[in-house]
Amino acid sequence: MAQPKITENTSKLASYDAYFEMVQRRKKLPRNLQETLTDAFANIPVSSFPQVPGGKVIEIDAETSIGDAVKILSESNILSVPVKNPAAQNSLDWRERYLGVLDYSAIVLWVLEGAETAAAAISASSAAAAGVGAGTVGALGALALGATGPAAVAGLTVAAVGAAVAGGVAADRGAGKDAPTAADTLGEDFYKVILQEEPFKSTKVSSIIKSYRWAPFVPVAMDSSMLSVLLLLSKYRLRNVPVIERGSPYLKNFITQSAVVRGLVGCKGRDWFDCISAHPISELGLPYMSADEVISVRDDELILEAFKKMRDNNIGGLPVVEGPKKKIVGNVSIRDIRFLLLKPELFSNFRQLTVAGFMNTVASATHDATKAATPITCKLGSTLCTVIDTLASKLVHRIYVTAEDGDEVVGVITLRDVISCFIYEPPNFFDNYFGFSAQEMLGN
Image 1: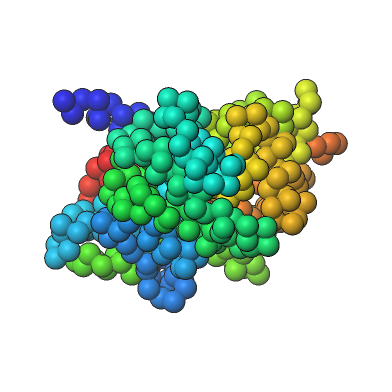
Image 2: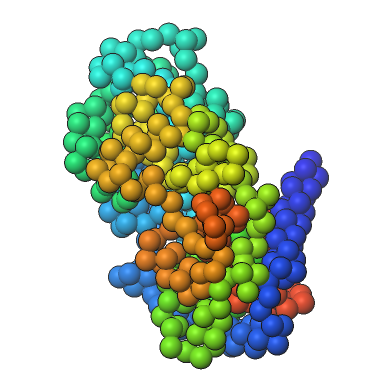
């Protein structure tokens, strides 16, 4: 019975190895410099990394309702949170105490399970629209995102979803002026939408653990090396790494990819950083992904196709291109799905809504024509320092690389790529350093 799980875990770990081997082949940083940096990071303790704002890691209980989880994320201005196991409150073993990390996008995808039905209600601006027959509509998640988990449609009646979102029309009337805040900080409108009626109101975080973008809980100790953190955030594709006190299950810090890249900005003026970051990215082997490997979406494709591509390829964003030369005209990310929950004009026409139409509506909602329509880009001749500055200052997870003589997309650089640029993995590092294999840590 366990064979499929073992096969899945082996495949996952093989993909980690494949990515990092590709990076090592393509990056042009001298090997001796990589070894020097890797050794340096191996001797820097995790305890030296800045604490999260406020000095206390936000956590939630698995029995927390989805509505309350969003409220916590919103009020704390964070995008992910560790989830505690209520059945192991007194355990001193972190493996028992924590179930995983809940990502904001998991909640959005869960809400979208009932979005098509909700669309009918909200476009009519009345809960009466919720009376539409169940056979007439289906779940947007099943249609566009392929979600098949047990929470997909369980208890998600047409009346419940319709009433929930139609009831949020009053809140949506204020979304015009408040949309930037609502979208950027998981704002009040989104919170009200999923809190209005059942099943949103009483569904627990535990119910979406296995069906959506659920991240493993893989902690490091305060006296672990920063190299372990950098490898987890790059090669092993974690977006965040919890930090615990050795011998204690309690969280001391929560280090994200974004925080590490912001930390690199603070390294300006140090010889090793200035020496590397002054080079054009092309001289360092960036972007690691070649032009024909970039997954994009045309501006005339349906926005649902864009979100499906993100799901299928386990990526958080896509460049929007037009024409045979793939000129970049915009970008969409998984977090942009939230606008489908805030704007009735998007709901009412989502079956025919193109990517271009979606971006225009988002720009209108935010009162900023450049917010969605203008992609974050750089050139092959841009320096690594410029790329890092842009990623940190714009608070984005990726920057698209365009050709020197035009706007054709020739690559993409992610936070993960930037971190990978500075390090390599010593042989058997995790086996030796942690005392147990990476398979045990990351195979769950």
